[in-house]
Image (tube, rainbow, N blue to C red):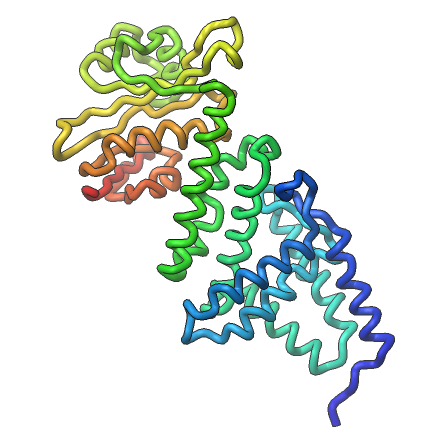
Amino acid sequence: MRQRMEPRTLLDFMGMAERLKCNMRHSRTAENRRESVAEHTYRLCVFAWLVKEEFPDCDMDKVMRMSLFRDLGEAVTGDIPAFVKTDSDREVEESAISNVTVMLPERERKELDALFDELEKAETMEAKIVHALDKMEALIQHNEADIATWLPLEYDLQMTYGEKECKADPYLAKLREVIRQISADKIASEGEERGQSYYIRKGVENMHLEEVAALLHRTDWAKDRTEELIRKSMENACPYGLFLSDCISEGGKDRQIGFARVLTDGVTTFYLMDLVIEEAYRGQGFGTIMMNQIMKENGHLYGMLHTQTAKAFYERYGFREIGNTKKTEEIYMEKPCG
């Protein structure tokens, strides 16, 4: 005979779940208050219900159960933002989940333990769907919040977070791309609301040579270039500059904080070089703003570049690795036309 759940056990577990209402997440709502873990869980379940018809071969009831209990461990640990969570934190969460499920009768305990094990392994399509939806729900919430509440690093996170998980299915990837575009539009609108506090210009006549040289001299690949070489390299290419207007830059004048060069014949091929953002402004979306403009004008062409550390960044724009060199640790990348 199946073990029945004693009323006290049921109420104790409900009390544990109540903590999800009290524990706050990093994300903020459109009304500028922090959301609770329970609120995130609720909308994750709504999300799973809305997409159920897109996955006719999956057990969407299981997806709903996984979504419902996915963050149960945070009743004990609280929410730890993904960008600061460590392996040690994950181990603590796993232990917390075990301490919670042990409260339940054997049947319910085994059911939840099996769900958490499946989520942890992330091998089934059901688990992959939940992980993708979980990350996209957080991205959606950030898009709904005032951009003034974003941390500097979240400008780039909105472009990259959850990308790997969403590759599990074309529909998930399509959803992720729409969310990414909304984020990009939000970032662009922020510049307009600030009175165009930043802007992009092209052409050697618009570049600030001394500031471009200062940017390049802080890189590993161009630290030895003279100003004369830099000037000539701009004259023989199409230089892009990202500028802060005097309303927010120091010194009361527009200042160049970003630079890139494009070599192109305009009809078949372009080569991207020297993309760099001043260190103090990295992680705030300015690299994305520059790259979006470059790809808007050149993305229909076959593209090439090489990089040492920004492979994942360029992969977002369709570039893929085609080779590398151990001597300089450079990765060569290309993107097809269109």
